[in-house]
Length: 124
Image 1 (tube, rainbow, N blue to C red):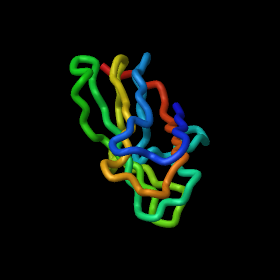
Image 2: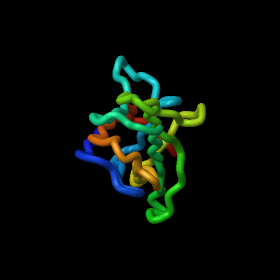
Image 3: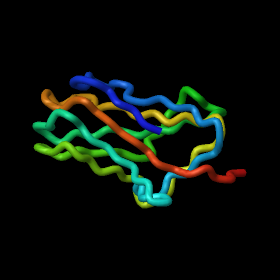
Image 4: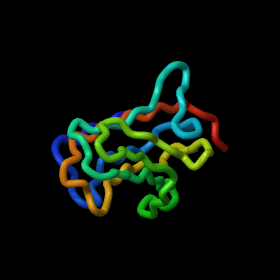
C-alpha cells in the first residue's frame, strides 16, 4: 500500500487510512519481502527530525487506535526509517492501519510519501 501527501504537513494530519480486506503481516521493522522494500521519504528536506506514527485499530474497536510502529526522517534528510519495535505487525481482515503526522510538524518538511510492503497471512 502507498500514499503521497503533497506540500507541508499540518499538526496530527492523517496521511493514510487503510482498512484490510485480508489478513496481512508486515515483517519486523518493515523489512524486505520477496525483494520488495517498504520506504518512507519526503520531497522537501526536514529542518528537524520528523516522526510519523503508524497506528492500528481492530475491526471490533474501529475507533480505538494503538501506536504499533513509527517512521522517522532525520534533520536535513529526505529518506526515513520505519521501525516496528522488533516484532512483525499483524493486521486481521477488517482492521485499519493509519499513518498520522507529528503533533508539531517541521516547518520545511513536506511531500510525504510512504510505501508499506507486507504479505497476505493466515491469522486465526
